[in-house]
Image (tube, rainbow, N blue to C red; front, top):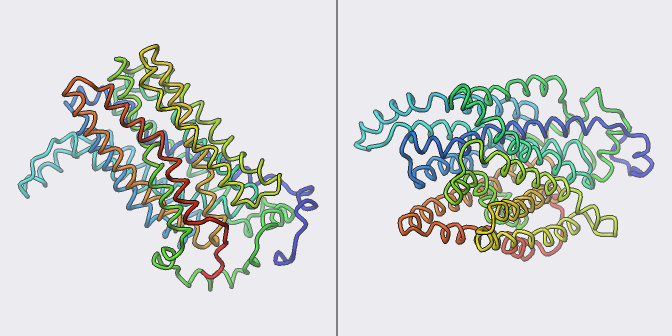
Length: 467
């Protein structure tokens, strides 16, 4: 079959298979493991803070270490994924992040070594803080590969009209991980200790990797993929699909970061990530601490509220991924339909402004309102990722995702550090309520600001074909 010839997508769709959804399921479970590993620390933070005497600023520094290394690693992760391919990149990524997750169990001994090394340079530090920062850094290096690899796999296995829906499905793995973690982590910690929680959750990545090696190949090399499904996947590809020889020649022509930075599309994606990624980081890292500080909830008491909240975000992720198709069915181009959907999604986080004013009624009020905001983030995330594959050729998708991921990580560091400083300040003046009000206000308006700048930078869709 000559895939460079025009294809009748409707006719092809009648005979296609569904193997692409198997790949989507693999990406879903990878993202679930990713967020399970990531969230163990935040769930144990209240008890670990008591055990090791951490302040809010100390915890913010540990969380920011992850975010900073994640931000830098995202830039290089995208390049690595584009260079070595999706299959190998995922193996490298999950191996590193699983080892990083396991290292948390040995953070205090590592911290003693780190303190000794820092002491040689005259720097005083606390062993537990140094050890956890080292572990978070290794975790971040590996986890940075997840989304560039997943978005590239989605671009390889799905036509444009299905990509945001597929992205929404695999991205909902973050929500499943966030739901499972509050159920599993406190229970494991109570029965076997906090070290066991890091070890048992960290081992899941190696199980996933064995399935990935078994089931994944590039579409053109995938024996389980029918010719009809391959044609359907490529049915809305503008440029002719390259032969293996042509692909090798194209891969040899490296696309530099400076080349990508000359496009407004890159800056639009990066700014959108900078403004909004930190909101999700804030919810992920600070919600257990918020419930503890505001309502005295710890351990098993936070399981049900967090499970409800993150269950809501699953609806946002999958529903947000589907939402643009509503507009596409009414004649919008894929990018225009996505931007229309993202504008409507950007209004939902404004309800978070009511979390503190109404929180005195019941802790369920802020939980549900923050749930709406977090759900909107996941809907937004499913679409902003897909704008990259709408506009850039496949060979540069992961690199652009990496640039945006770095920007998002920097935004996350800024918001996390700001949160630690704000909470410590208002705790000292016995007004932690105001501290959370300020942070929730920033989270609420971030999406509208992001959308406005993105639209100003790229007012109309234009696919890049000169890379």
